[in-house]
Length: 469
Ligand SMILES: C[S@@+](CC[C@H](N)C(=O)[O-])C[C@H]1O[C@@H](n2cnc3c(N)ncnc32)[C@H](O)[C@@H]1O
Image (cartoon, rainbow, N blue to C red):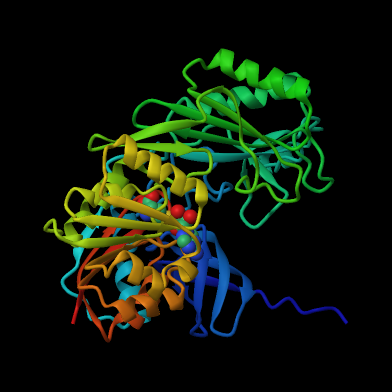
């Protein structure tokens, strides 16, 4: 029996809000929420639903009756196909408003937290070309745009170097100019694509798992250094050297040219050997005179200017007088730990990635900071009572977990310790709200400050200060 198509077309619907995952929000005539693609709050549009759930629809705005005055013209030719900058069609001041209200809503509704007066979100001065790290994928089956399909041309070359089409693991949109990372990022990516195509180097075929070229990572820093990492699938020395030598010759400003040969099913490099082809195996970022060494696997905040603002807020909230023992949980390469060290008696950083901890120790030595210590391991297993007994009872805990937030055992351990103050830095205010709810009996939220690290996207960073009740 044929399945009935349950999708609907709702006409003349007002789009009222923007929220989770960058989608706009509207209400259907039957009272459900609709998460809408391709719309801006204030638009009045026909909405074609694509999925129905118990309490909501997903859909796309098709025909527009009124265009919102919050709209602006997207600057990027890839807008709408590329999933990277979903909010590029909304003026920046409104992006900030929606980010601020998402943080507040999550803390109030999910966390049920009583909030102090909230400081306005700190916007980014640079709203384009602010990222210091981008990763592009090679593909031999480029995503074809509507214009290309309609042109009816026989397209011979389907090579692409760019981003995954949202929700499609095997389709890559070829990127000609990305507005998120400053030059020479675009020049390097375009050169690599052209050189590889001209020299018939095989782009990766995801379905057949074959080809030479897999991913390209470009990292830039405020010190002017550049790191390039090419990930190869096939181990062909001649072809690899042909490409890497051409890149080195064309861009002598590259200070670290590295590669990985990875023929396992997924393209994560974290369990792979990174080989330095030319220059150093690392680059340096600088902040307030502190130097941070970054290797290919290190986490470093992707918007350097806003990272500095984020760290200053974190240090202010920690309100250190100089005699405190501070724990910096999820320390990465120990950046926050070193940033606050001169205001504390001692700082202890804990992190899961061994390479990051190695860099953290080296960074501290280079920066001549001798009151920091770093330990490696899964937070849940390392941050235990015996760890506290050994290293001391913290007066202040700074925590900056990944998107999933803290494991409930880690929250329970913090409650067991009851430091005077907690500074919670988060890139996901929903999981932050969940964790704050668990802490609420023991801690009062005294300050909240959202920081926009990612203009043109819905992502937002949030810093919360908690004082023991
Ligand atoms: C959002 S980053 C913060 C890094 C650092 N605070 C900074 O500003 O650069 C989160 C860090 O948590 C680490 N991490 C993720 N899961 C972890 C776990 N279970 N135990 C310890 N560290 C973990 C990641 O490797 C990453 O370095």
